[in-house]
Structure formats: structure tokens, C-alpha cells
Length: 235
Image (cartoon, rainbow, N blue to C red; front, side, top):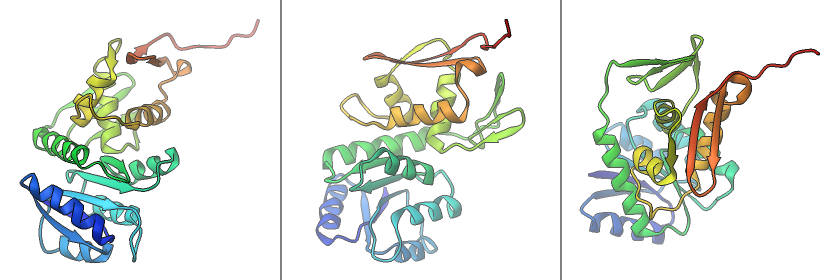
């Protein structure tokens, strides 16, 4: 696999490159966002790893460029020293498939690379569209609409929403969600599920007033239920 690594810190770049290449992948290091963008016009990479802090432009701008110019089929991992929920949400909003906080654990990084690549290769585009009232799911375009209006979702938000909607009433463990949506084993510890759940609950209006209940069950997982829409009557 040909991996592009955008990292301006020489020691970090060297360590990550050695780790990636030791696992059998090719890795090309770029120190600036512009140099990576220029190279993408000449060749194809199968996975992109981006650091947030760069000398010319911020990593999130490179991320948005990649999504706008290349699309959502390219797996992208974002590396950052920021670990606040707001920063993580910003990365996911920009189109990252996954994120890791520094210092990066090398074995975990390789596990995440393997998982993303496996998910990418297993995914096959279809012309299938499914209707789960009131949502229409377009698997080809990775799009969900409600009453004809598209709901803006990142690729992983779409996959998680799709999986929940196709398993209404089932208790889905965190381990199951990690395996099905991200391809991770239970040894990978991440807050990404909770953040994605919170975001799709808001975006798809999965609340009781709209006839849905998306519940977090402590130490168990999540369950999406279709319930009677709540209403308010005057006495």
C-alpha cells in the first residue's frame, strides 16, 4: 500500500515512516501541505495521514482539500496534539475517517491503518436505496435524506446512522460498532463512537419528540428505538 504522510516534525516523521514501512507499506513523507497537494496531482495514494500543525497551511485545510478534490473513498487519519471534543469534532466535520492524539502509539496506528484499508477494500458501491421512514438511504452516494432534504453527514456518520437504522431495537455493543463501522478490535480505545452518536442524534433528530429514542446503555452499548411521537395537549 502507498501511504502519504504529512508531518513537518523530522523526528516524528522518521519514526512513523519506519513503523509504516516495517509493516510492508510504502510511505512518502511531506513536510508542507502544498507539497503534498502538488504530488497528489501526479500520483495516487491509497491512504493519507495528516498532522494538524504545519508550517504553511493547517492540516484541516489539507483535509478539506482532499475531500473536495479526491472524494470520500480515500481513507484519511488525522494526527493532532489537540484532544478536546471541539477539536475532534472539527476534524470529523472536515472529513477525517479517524483521528489519533500525540504521542502516537505505533502499534495502534498500524491497527487503525489495517482496519481502514480493510473497510475501504470491502466497500463496494451499489445502486441500492433503502427507505426507513422518514429517511431515504442512498448507499451509492453515502447520502441520507429526510422529506427530500439531504442531511449533511461525514462518511463515518453515514455508516453509523445506516447501521443503527438497519438494526432498530437491537442492543449494539461498543465492540460491535467498532468492528462494523471502523474495523477495530476491542483493544482500540477511542471516544469516536460517543462523538459520532451525539452528532447523528442531533443531525437526524433521533429524539422522542420526533418518534425516536437513541439510548446509551452503561457498559453495554447503544439501542435505537422507533417510538410513538411525543405530543403536547392543552388540558
